[in-house]
Length: 123
Image (cartoon, rainbow, N blue to C red; front, side, top):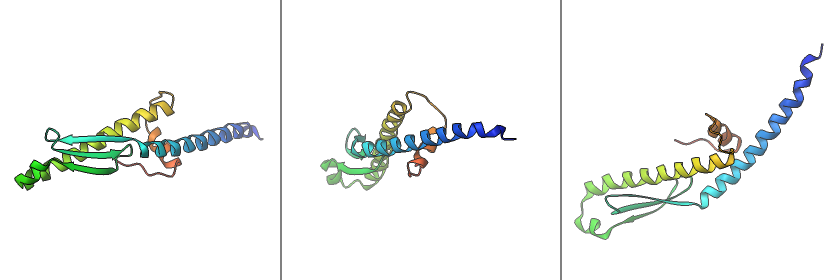
């Protein structure tokens, strides 16, 4: 009659582990906020500094690019530098996730853990 009750302990254990992992994800998020990456474009003429979450923090533009008043080139280089910084941030995030999950590469785990930590996944 009550054959399934034995599995309730397993479910409770899984939920506890998920909560612990969510807490670790929040810690990871806080750590990533303090990390810095730099993406550049145009042989370093434009640099974008971002944190480990991919949020842009600073933009540096070579003064000669401003002097040339080459708007089109600047409009091309800025997104390229931003994208480069975001790619580096994603790589850093993936590296940190691997250390958090003990090197396991579980499909969908990052999205799941991000949601448990109260964060929404970003692309």
